Image 1 (cartoon, rainbow, N blue to C red):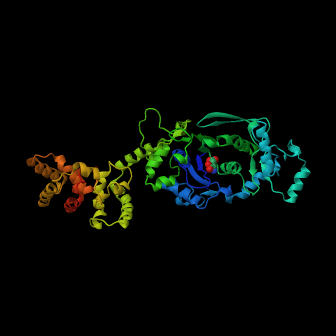
Image 2: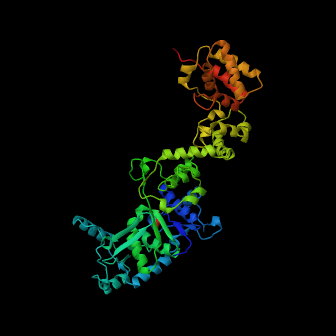
Image 3: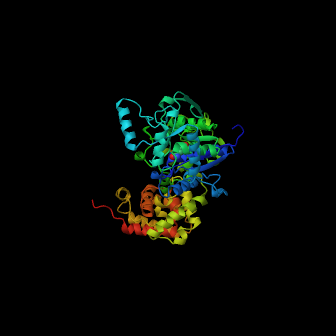
Length: 503
Ligand code: GLU
């Protein structure tokens, strides 16, 4: 393996959506391969036909591509293999299984599911760890089953599975890249089924065969696969193959440190995409679930290129990583702050179109959908939102007339003489050609001073008529962006529609 080019893989089963844990596994494999100038490929592990879900493969790949994780041998890179699909490789698994049978490292087992269950219950009752009882282990492999009996069953066409024979007294040892040396005692290892009665291999068998044939140098996967290691290592030994290096990633945890579950929040990458999270923030967030740059580094915002440059398996921890959605929102805000305005503008357009299909705008559509107008809204609001869609949903008043006016603000800020005051101030605004934030501010101050009023007396009601709510960006800048015509119209409408609650 020395000097060999690094090759990694992500090997999802097409049983549903891409889990955030799966995204992390894929990302670490991708980052490590890229860091080492190696190759990264995707293998679809669909040997459990009963769990196969229609479209799952397509969804997995599209979620990965959305995140920017693209396999080297995929058609997107001009390759024509990827992704590898195990159900298209059955002949290979059969061939290698035959070799294990010939070498007496595997045997036929005709036990029925009922028999196996009975055996399991019995062992549990005896306080033993359930294991196959080796009833069908042939005589010439140290068992009790005569060859003739096995031949008879095969001839009769009785369904069977093929099991590996775990040697009786060996200890299996390997060095995990993240966890260090780990040892297993063969007495605890079951005679794993390699081929199922439907002719498909099990995960354990197919993945070892493929990992070898596809020449992966590093297997990076979740901690839940650690207990499978002895079976896998024995298979490498049976074939005389040198195993790749293994790195088992720490568990993902809920904030209460239980195992990450759907019950405590979204776990499907698709859910985050649908909610408007950006791929940059998700990738950044997921990268930090188990990896850090090391002591002395305060940096938390990393682009994909920076991650590729700095990622190392040595800096992946053993301890479970807490999935903290607040951190994700924080990252999202960091990205909105620095994303180029024109990129955000393009992101807003589809959201705005959707909203426009639902309600009619107050201002001309050409104006509010223009790059220029949208860019002004972005500049003004980017400190206050985390998602692109929020430019439209949080500050809909930049596009649509307020339909209601926040009641508690009316009660608190609207004085009986407000229609008169606002009416007069509106005339001041109308008379001026300079509708900039600075000038509006100066005009407001000049308006309230001789009346011995504080600016706040007018500021709050102005915001209310202009936006319908009591919070938002700087009032004067908001008015400037809305434009003179719209502001004058909204003042007039507010005066007409806002009524003080009955005392
Ligand atoms: N198909 C397995 C999974 O769904 C792959 C495990 C591995 O990477 O070996 O997670």
